Image (cartoon, rainbow, N blue to C red; front, side, top):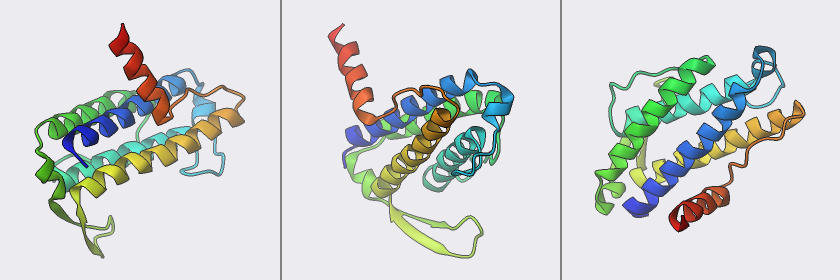
Length: 166
């Protein structure tokens, strides 16, 4: 993985999460928090989980002092997700390709197990993890009878191409 690839995928993940936040903004509180028995219970619970993962991995890779927000309401997510996204992008913009081979030591959330992962693998995990849970949130929107936004990677690439052409 190159720095350009890492940055592009981190930007994609932020773009796709913003699409879902925009869709969630149109839901009433009951639908946003409706327990559906999938993923992290509700659309809001699943979005909060994605955001928490974005922060925990940032704390592990970049800044151990990053404050963690385990559960959040929609206004907090709208504000804080943009902030952590900017941090991830700023971090990636300052990298060299060799930096992506750095081994990161970290512990499980319960502190009982220690692990080591290569930075490039963590970046791919971060994006893949968010994609999985965004897909679950898309399914929840469909259960509510709402047409979800397109968050697939190819839609992001198409939007980039259209913006470059104009």
